[in-house]
Amino acid sequence: MAVSENDPQLRRAFRMPGIPKPIQEYVLCILLHLLLPFLPLLIECGVQGRVDQKTLLLFLAIYPLAIGVTSKSKLMFGITVVIGLAFSAFFGLASGGIRLSELTFTMAYLCLAVVMLVHVLERYNRHVADRQPFLEIE
Image 1 (cartoon, rainbow, N blue to C red):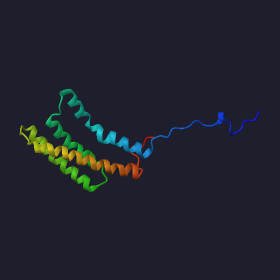
Image 2 (cartoon, rainbow, N blue to C red):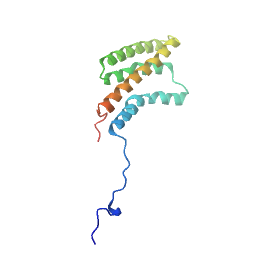
Image 3 (spheres, rainbow, N blue to C red):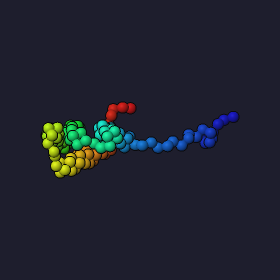
Image 4 (cartoon, helix red, strand yellow):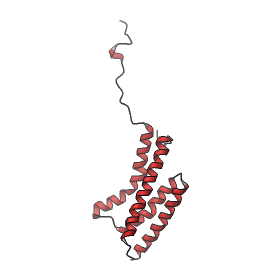
């Protein structure tokens, strides 16, 4: 008995659409590149109930530099170097026992938010609009 191509038993099952690769690249970048470095702060907060001010200053001395060196924007790189240098100095002062004003920590959160926002937008362009992979893993 001949089987017809229209036979329902031969039809392929419906395939669920996956998440488009550029979106996967972008989300993976946000998770690994922007959010994973916050893990030590999250752990400290979970253990101590707060993040120590010196820990925050040290984080802000290093994190913007890590973001800046991966940016394709020279301006972003320069700004993150300045932020990193400023918060390195603040960390040194705080480690020496000098009490810093609340304005220092307000500026810390503001700098962090601006660096992250600009980099999230830059990474959207890179991974979604320009379709550049985040990782070369297939």
